[in-house]
Length: 350
Image (cartoon, rainbow, N blue to C red; front, side, top):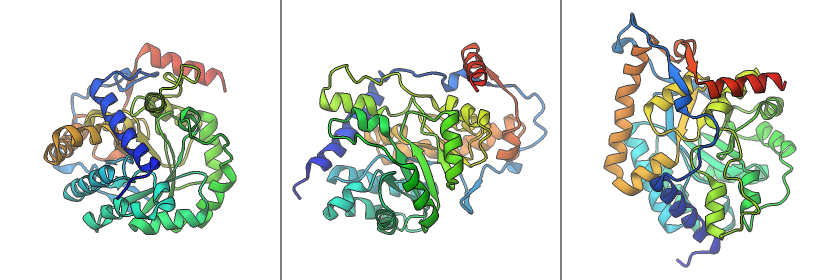
């Protein structure tokens, strides 16, 4: 199959994303997980056998509070990776999201790079993925394509504005309202690495989606990927733009957000999962770290890493004296001076 320019772009995103993760040269934006510490709990008064790390979202019981986030699909290479990720997700009993399916709507010959995910994971929880500008008809097609249990609608103005061939107009709110009202499955509004502010959470509250994926900075940085791909000048430089995942979760608290939160962006360890849950997330996901582990070390290593997280999670809950996520979210945290300064500034600005 001769691949299109859009398929080639998918491969470029993959190659550059993995390269940036491997080199560890991405700029650090705002507060990181290192800015949040757990308060020691000398007397846990519980046991690992009593801990339940599961979470319920969209009327679905997730055995584990993390999943493989969207990255791939749309080319032969990314289709193979989707297949391998789906096999790992099925083996480890975690959920999985596919990358944007817009290419499959334009180029039907690429659909099998997405449908393979359901074939390899017939009973798993799968997230479809489209941009926020797509009509409800496209949303239904994307859902049907992989028999999805939910759909992520990504909002990515920063990425598009850096992309040479990207969109230049963004009128999403009315369309999102229609999709949320008519979608046959739960709708998640998802940022793609630039985080969300208090004002954004308040706007989304009026839409009432099933959940919000904060998509914070310090994970895969699409503005840098697009700059590298197109060799753009520094005129449009967003290397330090956005809010981190930690900051975004705190912004949600300050906005008094009542919608379920998914934490994505820079999650590279089980400790990051724990901290995200303590900061208010109901579910977490990792894209770049999972993908890079697969690409560099293979399926067996990725499965071993996920299994290690699954072993560690109930032990860390026990350490903190929490038998479930609700109890975990009431445990105290210590913030670094920089993070305290961020909170003070944001509270003062309201």
